[in-house]
Image (tube, rainbow, N blue to C red; front, side, top):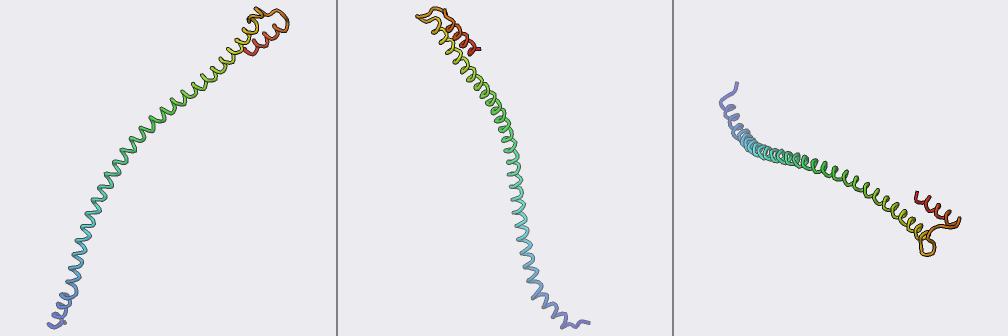
Length: 130
């Protein structure tokens, strides 16, 4: 059984050792609560930022889709331009061949082909045109 002196010694030990530790633990608990509040605020901010990023991603997706459509249109236009260039080159070469033929056969010196060589040359030029 504990005597009065033992109880006083235990009481003194609690007062000197345990109560300061308890006070420190209370302070640490308060600090942890503050840190928890700060972390909650940071988490809220991060959630808002994430929401904004999601909205931006949605907008960027729409822009990207529009750019893809524009790119497809440009590809189509580029193909059409290539065809026009090719057709222009063909037209230019045919026009030049016809001009040569006209100059050769209907120039000042020869109003039309008379000899066999001239007729063959005319046929050769016509084959180039076809």
